[in-house]
Image 1 (tube, each protein chain N blue to C red):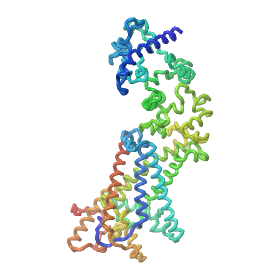
Image 2 (cartoon, rainbow over the protein chains, first blue to last red):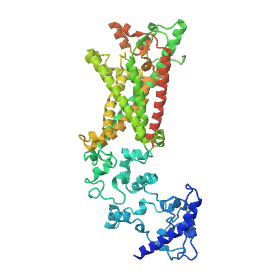
Image 3 (cartoon, rainbow over the protein chains, first blue to last red):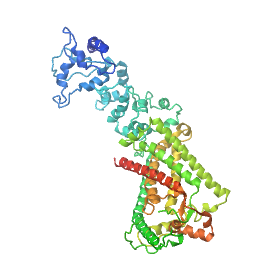
Image 4 (cartoon, each protein chain N blue to C red):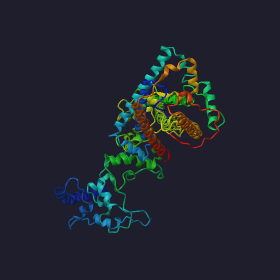
Length: 333
Length: 274
């Protein structure tokens, strides 16, 4: 509760402080100019402000790309990347999220408290709290389940409707779900994504974002209850039969996808067999064909010197019977 | 090595040659728009798809070329059917003139390999050699496999009414693998067998001109030459040298196709080595 009310004060104050700075700047700069660094917003605080910590103070330490905590973990923050993130563009200062800095002396010794994203993103956090990512963590305390920042990198997060976010998403989910990333890459959805196109199903289009549930859970977008509607978001004429297609079929997994597994093995050996057989055939043929061409050219030039006019068809007297005689190079065309 | 003078014999008629040109166009178009999907993780694939305004356009070109290829396939089947059923030309189905594999293709193959290594004479090939038959039936099989799986992927809602879900997973896999086989085979082994081997290098223009020097027929297909001579049918296919413009056009189209094909083979090799 205290955290919540503190945060509200900080948010309200920051908004006010930011507006002091943003309004005159907005009037004077062209629309495309990069937004002023959040440092500027904080630096504009009046002297009698209750919170003294500015972004510039934070960046004194965290601005060093080499900065690490005692554990050796990097604590560096890239101010330019932050400025391009969705929060940076909103001109939020460090203390907007790291509200517990309030009243602390710098440099702060302890690790700061975890940022409470629900201060602003209440719905998302509620949905997340019921999701498999959160329940798996709570269940045994050992299972690794993604939290907010695992997917929305803390200081660089992009607006979720943006192309950049949608292109990054597959890699973000694939950080943990490696096997699913691999099978996704085998499908049209995955192939067209890796060719750089955004308007094609990505992870969250089928699985949802914060409200992800196991497939057996009827709340899941990919549960048997909802899968057809999920496909129909893009494939308007999808039917239950249509949804039997496995968008994560694994050609190397005979149990999950037996037909695909055997089809894959068959195609593999068909390719190896065909190229192996005719490759060898061509390699044996090549030297023989070269010899044949030289022999033919020589016969041709001899014929041409004997009788000036064109050679009649009868006068092509190659005998096929002496194949081992290697002709000398008398190349003429 | 075709001489412009001398006597010529007709090997392919105008319709077959036209079909082959359309086949080349459709095949190259399909390969260009399809290979980036097979090798989607390579840098060149991304560059190739950027040649198209968006991915839907590449898909539309792919389907347009597929439609053209299916049309070519049907025209070919109708022509063969007419000759067999209409003209009762049973020799199309069995015998020395037939594209259907014959027992002698096995002995021809063994004899040819022996000739490669200097252990015997070159077999007296007839109208179609065993490797030409393989080329033909490989494309025939490929049309069936790639065509059927492609239609499945094109109209999934329709086919899902009576096909199980895994059929679409399998269709996507074999469409890509069979395409890789087809493209790889045509651009390396068909090119070598038909055009790039030293006797034919840089290309055999017969598929564009339709005619070969009679001397070449006697040398390369003595079986066919002797058979037709004996039957008295050789005169019927005797003709004159192809016009110069046709030879030039043939060389231009053929060289373009070979350069394009070998470029694609290089890209495939880059993709496979990743």
